[in-house]
Length: 312
Ligand SMILES: Nc1nc2c(ncn2[C@@H]2O[C@H](COP(=O)(O)OP(=O)(O)OP(=O)(O)O)[C@@H](O)[C@H]2O)c(=O)[nH]1
Ligand SMILES: [Mg+2]
Image 1 (cartoon, helix red, strand yellow):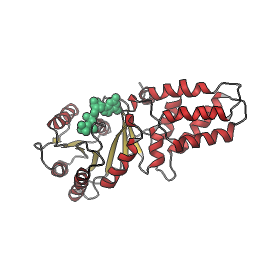
Image 2 (cartoon, rainbow, N blue to C red):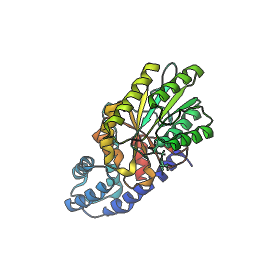
Image 3 (spheres, rainbow, N blue to C red):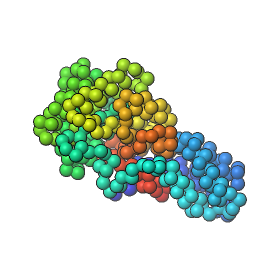
Image 4 (tube, rainbow, N blue to C red):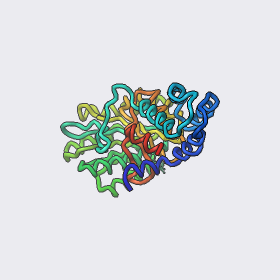
């Protein structure tokens, strides 16, 4: 299966909603009027793309098609083009869809450090395994640092992935300060000449001040060992939680200056429109989307491909 097909499959629930409930609103030969636009609004909001984006879409449809006879493909093209616009903020760096590592800022010299954080159970550890796999596929060596010292099972989970991927992992006994695990991971990577360190962290609520400070400390300590690190602070959001992700992003960003979002579990939701809301309401780009539980189920996020996959 090609990457694009996998993305389409992962977005199946959202696609179904768009195909059945949205596309069917527009009947060839009818006139596009305000009542129809209202029904369109209600359906689009179900995808969780948010009020602002939905309003922008409606304005575009009104301007281009209001009072005219409906040609379904033309309506669809207008929606797609506008969504692509909305997803690509001005001044955004466009990465290369054919190079899955292009969204990452890699160190020019010495190890690149990726710090991964997020609320409990959103998909951090799984996304780390997927990222490690992606990096390995592109010829990079990876070391994992098991910074979730809060739960014993968390270390085991990461260990299993490391074993499967054949990459070294740094672990410490339960209760160890996670910052020191991250530090040790950086140290070992420097010594062994490893290309990338990925630091796992325990899940935490964005409202928990102490835990946010702990995350800030991990970030600082990494920077002490390797200048300019972490090169990426990736926030993992669970697509099925919809709009709550927005407030998570704000608080995490304060603690670790998030440089990108991994939106996991897009395959489990019809609310794939959350990608649009995130782009609109925050300055942090979605860099990857998770579309399944397997190692290969991480896709680079490209606005054009995403919209095409959603509407094809
Ligand atoms: N369907 C689907 N499931 C996913 C995806 N990413 C993660 N999961 C599943 O979500 C569950 C939680 O994933 P973890 O990676 O353990 O999440 P975590 O954020 O590390 O959790 P904590 O460490 O407990 O905070 C697991 O069952 C994963 O298999 C995804 O993209 N799609
Ligand atoms: Mg975890």
